Image 1: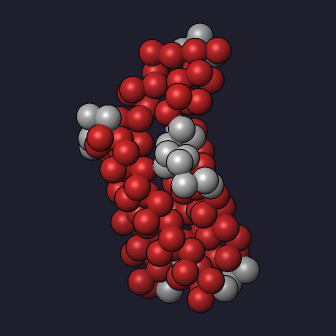
Image 2 (image 1 turned 90 degrees about the horizontal axis):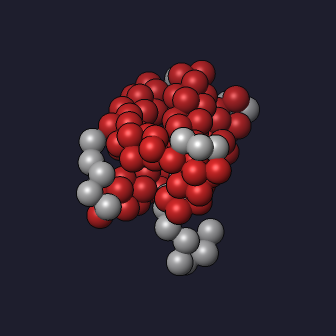
Image 3 (image 1 turned 60 degrees about the vertical axis):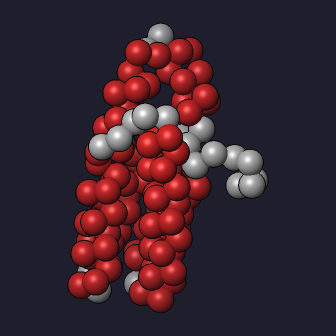
Length: 119
């Protein structure tokens, strides 16, 4: 991801929804992401703290789908890697990826807040 790329590619998301004839869902979907992403990160954090890699895998998968839908590409990519690490039972790698995913999620939510979209 380049230094200029935003955490969420809102314009690409909007363009894709416009092409599908459903541009009106952009803001509601971003609002839903702003509400649900912190819950997903909380579930991931609890699973990591418990050392439950199966729960980490499930939580990462669920949040990855949501992040991908709104074009939070860095976050979605990190969650994909976290999913893989959890399936491979690599707790150390999962821990590192979780920390990076937390940062990416914070950046995405910060961008939405700057746009006036909050949980």
